[in-house]
Amino acid sequence: MVTSAAPRLSVVIPVYNERATIEELLKRVQAAPIDKEIVIVDDGSTDGTRELLAGLGADDGRVRVILQPKNRGKGAALRRGFAEARGSIVLVQDADLEYDPADYPVLLDPIEHGVADVVFGSRFLGGPHRVLLFWHSVGNWLLTRLSNMLTNLNLTDVWTCYKVFRVEVLRSLTLREDRFGFEAEVTAKVARGRWRVYEVPIAYHGRTYAEGKKITWKDGIRGVWCTLRYGLGG
Image (cartoon, rainbow, N blue to C red; front, side, top):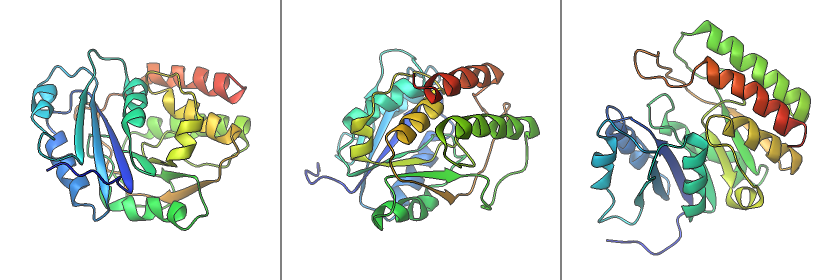
């Protein structure tokens, strides 16, 4: 049965080769007690994820699956998902189980109370988190500090997955980055637009490369370039 009423929340999920986790993640998102639609964008998966997703959503207008014709990256998948979103609030959700949909209420609270336009879910503000990958945390710290210097924000976690936007914010931005540089780009452009930004603590269940983590040192180098480019007005 397709529901015609606009949802309160659009959860946009970019997916690439997450066959082992996408079903469980979808169950967790659906279980969150919030009026929502789920927009899943498969970014050219080759591990069976695409075939699994192709059978979803046919009987439920609140789950929509979009199949990108080829792999282009997280940023490209998000742009497609944002364009399809119908909710008044848009939330980014990774498909790898590192981030817990049980945190949706705390993420939405500042927007729903009218004090924020954008909310970042920070892994470094005291929420429970798995302990691993020291050099990843150092890289994140350095990139976040560089971003803050250029944007004049005081964020603790620019590279978090959990970013929540009033839909008007996204409609005002022109986004270009196809891969993980999206994080630096959207942060800089939100800051330039003088939107009200909040951070809230979230849980984080990080995974290792053996467990499927995809971001690498190459993305870190690209992250420095994107932080400089967009932070300086690109």
